[in-house]
Length: 597
Image (cartoon, rainbow, N blue to C red; front, side, top):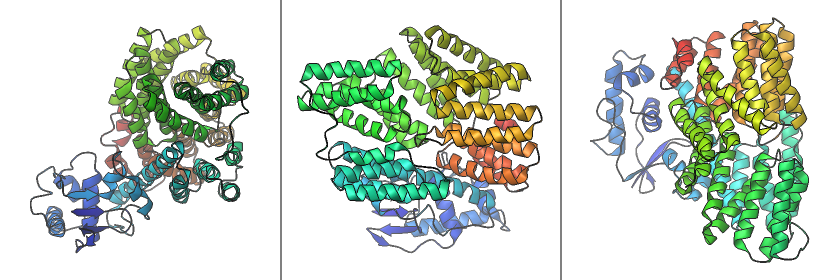
């Protein structure tokens, strides 16, 4: 067996033993690009990308391909034009295995470095830009699988094993509070409360020193779980569990979140006590969904509950519970920008879903994920089917949600009339349903359309109303989007100081809880860079674009990665436009294409 390791210092192994490496850093660069590119690249493209400084770029490419074949011991691979990258069934590639759901998680604990660690090509700056993006993306993918493995082990009662994976997630991204919370929860569940409290202190110091923020209450509460720590006092059997489940659901709908969560925790505890696995699964679904959607900063606890629900639903054959649990886990991953793990959960939910209601909800989230990535054809396909199925089953709220995402996608493509039609209908359904907790989202998107059309009065009304309601709801996503819009509005009026204040407020609001929607954060940063550039504030633009580029790459938001490179080009980086064109070549967005040419 031949193994290609591109994580850390690159190496090729045969039956576990290193073999002679291909000569030259460009050989490793070429191999990694071939193995990670979404589609087979042409020889001319590769020659321009990696060997543009050679006297004979195509000749240099041919020599390097031959060198790779020698190192691999395979004469009949890496041929054709475009180049075929299939290497055979006897070859494994670490970067490809990381993303495969069937691959064992143990290899994750062995990963120490970044993609092509130590490889730099100062003569090929466009490749360097591509490599930086791939390093961020791959690191995020490894972190996501570490988290997923830890939560799965925690849900099946193997907390001691979960600790190693949670600790590695913390080491890979110590600025993510959710990673620390997962480690604290794992340690506390093993009974090691001392270590859990020590980890809380470590996290608090890191967040305070590096980000200037305090940890959320959920971090300390995670230390209160334990092997002998019941979730609630004893009740009285199945009837009590069912009553608590109904009461918890009603309280959540009424907006009494804390009371509702207490009822749902009691329902889970009592259903477990009376050994009703089906009821316990339904209670866990209700609890997990409430923690993910109704309680800010509680995604980590919600994810554990959803994983436990899947275990019970599988045992009892409860298909509907399994669909909901997989879908909600996918939603959490979409919000966090963990695309690969989101795709895995949503694909599993799709395989299990049967009804229009189930499919409408699922397809909307798949459309959101595709849109966040900049895959508009897939996004429109999922979202339009979601709208149709939601209408068919009479789920007006789901239809409004999906329509708002359709409107957002058209807005990002500068298709204003289509965006207006979708958002107008979304708002009509919101008002019909009196779904005021969702109103700020389509409202702020509609206001951005008004701003693009030059109607500052209508934009003012929309942004200010969304801001006020978002603040009343204490929703950081709505607050961040509205503050971003108010920044753009003040910029359009020529008041840069007010614009900068609002955009700073947007960035702060977006990150005030650990379970934030990363796309909104990146969208706010993009607007802040554009505003700073428009007003000649290059110092602020440079510092902000660095944050945007890292976040967009890490969360696989390809369009925002491209926009970060375009901002850098406007800041005077002559290589950034070429990198933007390389990274944006397969994004189907006419508005972006106009900026690239």
